[in-house]
Length: 98
Image 1 (cartoon, rainbow, N blue to C red):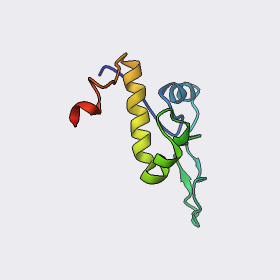
Image 2 (cartoon, rainbow, N blue to C red):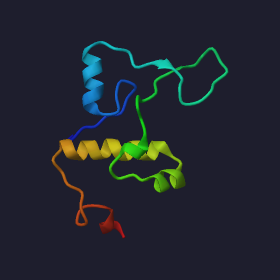
Image 3 (cartoon, rainbow, N blue to C red):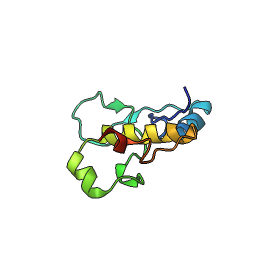
Image 4 (cartoon, rainbow, N blue to C red):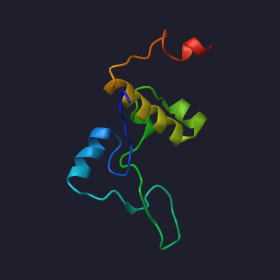
């Protein structure tokens, strides 16, 4: 393992998750992102998760993909690359796959 990243019900980054974890806080709360007519509406949502706050995302892409889990995976991977001091550029990134 050369880098780390996290997005959990305690925080949308590793640092945010760790900070709340060491305080002993719980990450589960009532469902807020959609309506659920059930008494079982306690979930582990990632707080303040908005893909439009990511520096590599724009409104059009977010709308076209309509798959937040992909953006979440990208954000966690980017965080891990940063912590590993690795850079993704044209030589090491997806351009090489084309």
